[in-house]
Image 1 (cartoon, helix red, strand yellow):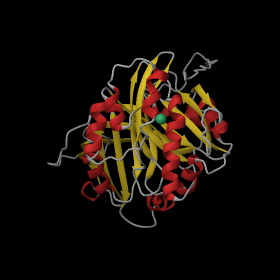
Image 2 (tube, rainbow, N blue to C red):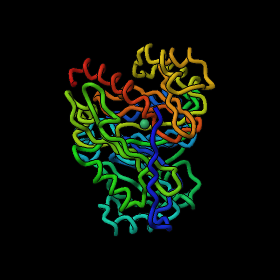
Image 3 (tube, rainbow, N blue to C red):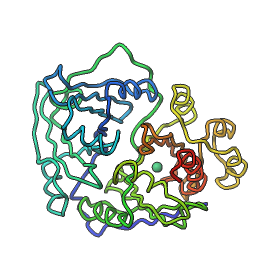
Image 4 (cartoon, helix red, strand yellow):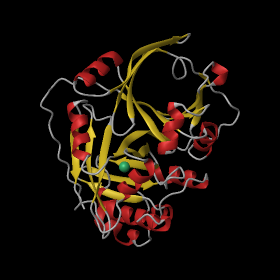
Length: 375
Ligand code: FE2
């Protein structure tokens, strides 16, 4: 099945919010020390920076890890009754901040707030011996926020106040390169509102739209729009639940997360077979794809460079669009609640998101929902 790409041309030629890429993703988690160990051991992230009691921070601890261009910050509260502990109590572990790398964090704040964004953090310049960083922030869906980061005058490991984190323990990387896209789940009938937010407030354009006829199985459905910034480096699909015979996976997410939030982080690799083999050996759990998927996949997608056997063995999915093909696989949720998970993706020309796999993928998710008693 070919995915359709409806590129909506922007009416304005000046990008009022130029973004260089994703700067970091910050998760609020119950135990950042153990989460950091998990992302090192299972996903091959490398230790980068630390802030906490030993650096003079009294209310929280943060470990920052990096692999390729991906920076993950893991933060836990050091006492109850704080904003972070309230967030974790309501949502469980999850993404709080999607930070965007910009050249001018002050302009990014005023350009977006003047277009209707709700402020999260007024522009703030912080300094230490490595230079200075200016950040500002706005709210997006739910309690998730975007922080704009201008680090052009900084040469430290992460942000002012952080010191290098240099443990002896350093499992090897697994070939994760950069964040391909990050998906938000929003409430019933809220997809258009948030697609419009990214268009109007952040100057994004809509790449693709899927309705419930595209994304449905016998039982469940959802709708999705993919929003992208001017240079295409940031891609945010926005999902909302749709009516089906049973409970949509998006609705399950909303129930357990306590509202809208980040559903998955898709990370790119140049060799998905190698990457997924290593992830699986290190204990990362993936959704199970039935062997029957592989009986017809090549009829659907045509010739591919990879042997089918390792794809089938690992459960990697394949899809093709007008420009090429892609390989992708999805982890099970990485926390106790059935909320956030990761996608590993390798693009070989394709710029779409695996529409041809939606049915197989959602049936796999439904099997898991059945086991959880939430379908
Ligand atoms: Fe995805």
